[in-house]
Amino acid sequence: MSDSNNDAYRIEVFAESEYLPEQSDADQKRWAFAYHIRIINRGSQGARLLTRHWIITDGDQRVQEVHGEGVLGQQPELAPGQEFQYSSGAILETAVGSMRGNYQMLSEDGTCFNAPIPAFTLAADRALH
Image (cartoon, rainbow, N blue to C red; front, side):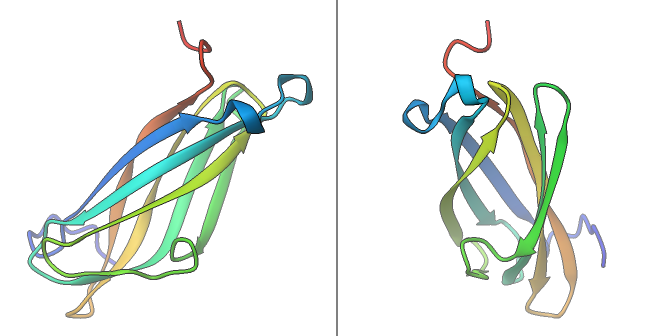
Protein backbone atom coordinates (compact mmCIF):
# COMPACT_ATOMS: atom_id res chain seq x y z
CA MET A 1 0.00 0.00 0.00
CA SER A 2 1.30 3.46 -0.80
CA ASP A 3 0.62 6.89 0.64
CA SER A 4 1.36 8.32 -2.76
CA ASN A 5 1.34 12.04 -3.44
CA ASN A 6 0.67 11.15 -7.06
CA ASP A 7 -2.02 13.38 -8.60
CA ALA A 8 -3.86 10.27 -9.78
CA TYR A 9 -4.70 9.38 -6.17
CA ARG A 10 -5.95 12.52 -4.43
CA ILE A 11 -8.92 12.24 -2.10
CA GLU A 12 -9.88 15.30 -0.05
CA VAL A 13 -11.91 14.85 3.14
CA PHE A 14 -13.86 17.54 5.01
CA ALA A 15 -15.48 16.98 8.40
CA GLU A 16 -17.90 18.99 10.55
CA SER A 17 -19.18 18.02 13.97
CA GLU A 18 -22.40 18.85 15.75
CA TYR A 19 -23.27 18.47 19.42
CA LEU A 20 -26.52 16.56 20.10
CA PRO A 21 -27.83 17.82 23.47
CA GLU A 22 -31.04 15.80 23.23
CA GLN A 23 -29.01 12.56 23.13
CA SER A 24 -26.50 13.64 25.80
CA ASP A 25 -26.60 13.28 29.59
CA ALA A 26 -23.80 14.90 31.59
CA ASP A 27 -24.86 13.04 34.76
CA GLN A 28 -24.27 9.75 32.90
CA LYS A 29 -21.01 11.03 31.34
CA ARG A 30 -22.53 10.73 27.90
CA TRP A 31 -21.97 13.41 25.26
CA ALA A 32 -23.37 12.66 21.81
CA PHE A 33 -22.10 14.14 18.57
CA ALA A 34 -22.97 13.86 14.91
CA TYR A 35 -20.29 14.31 12.29
CA HIS A 36 -20.80 15.11 8.65
CA ILE A 37 -18.21 13.94 6.13
CA ARG A 38 -17.64 15.10 2.57
CA ILE A 39 -15.20 13.08 0.42
CA ILE A 40 -14.08 14.49 -2.93
CA ASN A 41 -11.99 12.67 -5.54
CA ARG A 42 -9.52 15.31 -6.76
CA GLY A 43 -7.41 12.71 -8.56
CA SER A 44 -7.42 11.48 -12.13
CA GLN A 45 -8.28 7.87 -11.14
CA GLY A 46 -11.64 6.62 -9.94
CA ALA A 47 -11.43 5.09 -6.46
CA ARG A 48 -13.52 2.98 -4.10
CA LEU A 49 -13.56 3.50 -0.34
CA LEU A 50 -12.70 0.08 1.13
CA THR A 51 -12.19 0.62 4.87
CA ARG A 52 -12.20 3.29 7.56
CA HIS A 53 -9.91 3.80 10.54
CA TRP A 54 -10.95 6.33 13.18
CA ILE A 55 -8.91 7.51 16.17
CA ILE A 56 -11.28 9.08 18.70
CA THR A 57 -9.73 10.89 21.67
CA ASP A 58 -11.82 12.22 24.56
CA GLY A 59 -11.02 15.13 26.87
CA ASP A 60 -9.24 12.79 29.31
CA GLN A 61 -6.95 11.59 26.48
CA ARG A 62 -8.60 8.16 26.34
CA VAL A 63 -8.22 6.83 22.81
CA GLN A 64 -10.64 4.55 21.01
CA GLU A 65 -9.83 3.15 17.59
CA VAL A 66 -12.50 2.03 15.17
CA HIS A 67 -11.76 -0.09 12.09
CA GLY A 68 -14.39 -1.23 9.64
CA GLU A 69 -15.40 -1.85 6.09
CA GLY A 70 -16.76 1.08 4.12
CA VAL A 71 -19.02 3.72 5.63
CA LEU A 72 -22.67 3.18 6.59
CA GLY A 73 -22.55 -0.27 5.02
CA GLN A 74 -21.40 1.13 1.67
CA GLN A 75 -18.14 1.13 -0.24
CA PRO A 76 -18.75 4.15 -2.46
CA GLU A 77 -16.95 4.55 -5.76
CA LEU A 78 -15.92 8.06 -6.68
CA ALA A 79 -15.10 8.97 -10.26
CA PRO A 80 -12.65 11.84 -10.74
CA GLY A 81 -14.35 15.03 -9.57
CA GLN A 82 -17.16 13.15 -7.83
CA GLU A 83 -18.03 13.52 -4.15
CA PHE A 84 -19.76 11.43 -1.51
CA GLN A 85 -21.32 12.73 1.71
CA TYR A 86 -22.56 10.95 4.80
CA SER A 87 -23.30 11.57 8.46
CA SER A 88 -22.65 9.37 11.48
CA GLY A 89 -22.17 9.76 15.20
CA ALA A 90 -19.91 9.29 18.20
CA ILE A 91 -20.47 9.12 21.97
CA LEU A 92 -17.82 10.44 24.37
CA GLU A 93 -17.49 10.31 28.16
CA THR A 94 -16.28 13.94 28.15
CA ALA A 95 -17.74 17.16 26.76
CA VAL A 96 -14.77 17.69 24.44
CA GLY A 97 -12.76 15.40 22.20
CA SER A 98 -11.43 14.95 18.70
CA MET A 99 -11.53 12.53 15.80
CA ARG A 100 -9.10 11.82 12.97
CA GLY A 101 -8.25 8.88 10.80
CA ASN A 102 -8.09 7.65 7.23
CA TYR A 103 -9.93 5.80 4.54
CA GLN A 104 -8.22 3.03 2.61
CA MET A 105 -8.99 3.55 -1.04
CA LEU A 106 -8.60 1.27 -4.07
CA SER A 107 -8.11 3.03 -7.40
CA GLU A 108 -9.45 1.67 -10.65
CA ASP A 109 -5.87 0.79 -11.68
CA GLY A 110 -5.52 -1.46 -8.59
CA THR A 111 -3.44 0.90 -6.42
CA CYS A 112 -4.32 0.96 -2.70
CA PHE A 113 -3.74 4.28 -0.95
CA ASN A 114 -4.80 6.13 2.19
CA ALA A 115 -6.98 9.23 2.23
CA PRO A 116 -6.31 11.10 5.49
CA ILE A 117 -9.22 12.45 7.52
CA PRO A 118 -7.99 15.67 9.16
CA ALA A 119 -8.52 16.01 12.91
CA PHE A 120 -11.70 17.78 13.96
CA THR A 121 -13.07 18.77 17.35
CA LEU A 122 -16.11 17.39 19.12
CA ALA A 123 -17.33 19.91 21.71
CA ALA A 124 -20.55 20.29 23.66
CA ASP A 125 -22.05 23.78 23.61
CA ARG A 126 -20.09 26.08 25.92
CA ALA A 127 -17.50 23.35 26.62
CA LEU A 128 -14.76 25.36 24.86
CA HIS A 129 -14.11 28.91 26.04
